[in-house]
Image 1 (tube, helix red, strand yellow):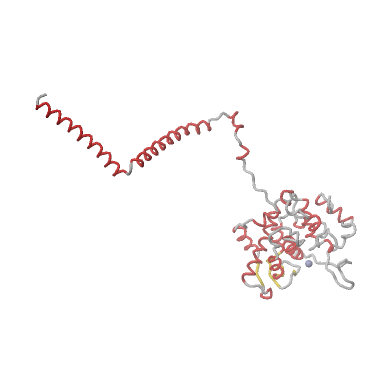
Image 2: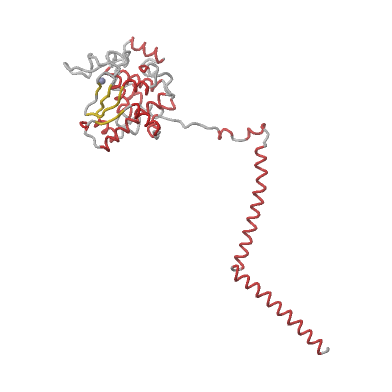
Length: 329
Ligand SMILES: [Zn+2]
C-alpha cells in the first residue's frame, strides 16, 4: 500500500471516529437541555396518549350525532322516566324546614304588622325569634292551603291568608293572648311563644314526646284569636274541665265555627282534605293526640266525651261540608 493511500485511510477512519463522538455529544447535550432522556420519553408517550385521546374524542363526535338521530321507535330503550321532572314530595314537617322566600316575607310585612309591646318583656333578639315563627306559622298554612280539596269552611271560599288579612290588622306580642273582637290587632302572649320555641315545638308538626307541636303552639292560637275578630265570641256551657261556679269559655256548637271550632275543623281538614303524602309524618299518633283527643274538643258544648263525637246536627253538618263525619272512619 502506498504511503499516500495509508494516509487517506487514516484520515477517513479519523473522520468516522470524530463524527461518532460528535453525534454522541449532541445526544448528551440534547439530554442536558430537555431534561433526562427518560423524561423526554415519557413526554413523548404523553404526547402520543394525548393524540390518541384526541382520536378517541374525534371518534365520539359521530356517536353523539348517532344518538340524536336514533329512530323514534328505538327511543323507548332510553331511560326517559329518569329524565321526567318529579316535584319533591312535601310533608307537614318538610314545610317547616323550607326557606321562606324573601318576596313572601316582604308581602306579609305589607299586609300585616307584627310587633312586641313593652309588656311582652322580650329582648330584641327574642322578639325577632318569635316574629320569625309567626311568619313560619302563616307561611305553613298558606303552603298547606293550596292542597286542601276544599277551602277551609270559615273563610268564605277564600284562602286562609286572605281570610286572615281581612280579619286582623296585625299581631301584637303581649303579656296575654286575646282579641278585641273586631278588625284590629290580635294579641299573642310572646313569652309562651318563646317557651315553645325553646322546647323545640317549632321544629316539628307533631312532637310525640310532648303530645303537641307546631299546630297547637302557633297555628291554632293565631287562628283562634283571628276568628274572634270575625265577631264570634265564646259562650258558656257545662264543661267537664269547668269547676262548679267557674265560667268557662266555649263554643256553642261546631257549626258556628267559633274560635275553638275552627281549630277542630282545621284538624279535620288536615286529616281528610289533604293528600296522605303530605300528612304522612304528622299522622304518626295524629289520631290519638291531634285529632281524636285534641284539647279543643272539650271546648265545644255539643261534643260528647263518652261517644267521642258531636251532636247529631253537628255531625250531619260536618259530613255535609267535608264528606266525612267526625271521628276515625
Ligand atoms: Zn278565645
